[in-house]
Length: 276
Image (cartoon, rainbow, N blue to C red; front, side, top):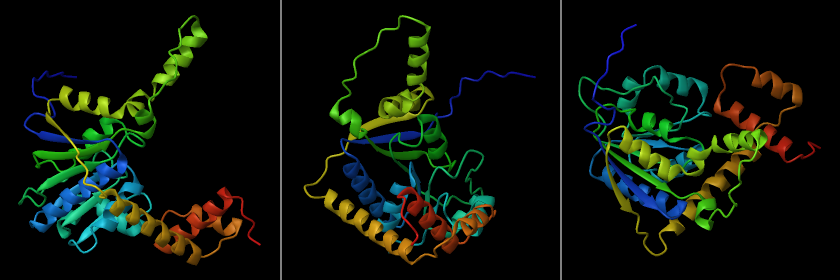
């Protein structure tokens, strides 16, 4: 084993502009506006999102703004596997790609025969990813040297966490404290993300999102439309029996109709609704 020490950091030569919003809707609307501006200028954009929910919002907002793809855990198996098998080649077909955390480490986009994407965006908080995940997500497209990050304070932090500090007096208290600190990076995502970005060498700048009056109404209406469309889809989906659900769940590949049918079954089970 040879260990080689190098002074070069993974973020060297890459600029990250962190756009910070006080509320989620403000951050999402600002990100959508910026992405639409890039697309109208004829640029192509890679968009990493922290959750599928945010991804669906971006997908909804960008309808009519070019050819796009949204790759997430419940993308039909054939479509998802085809993209993930050769993301470098498949991404060339799109003006924008929305990527959830399902696109994991080991997948990179290099386009050595000519750069395709002009911008990289990350939109999300720490509800499903930690800063180290974000490092991977914003470097998925290797050649883009300017990254836009849109994030916000979790709801709990906006209210102010008034939990009193507990004094460690015995081993049991220490064990509880260690367990509680496991999720520190998610609970303090914004601070942890900024620290991580700077520590690995990114050239980080910060900018507060200044929302326009009434701008979040667009996002609220978009979420409502997404919910309405999803409710209609699940209402129209096939109703599965327990045996049909278990048989389908054991398969290795699913179509969109099959995914919707399983989602419908799981939702009704969660709500404890009687099939009859």
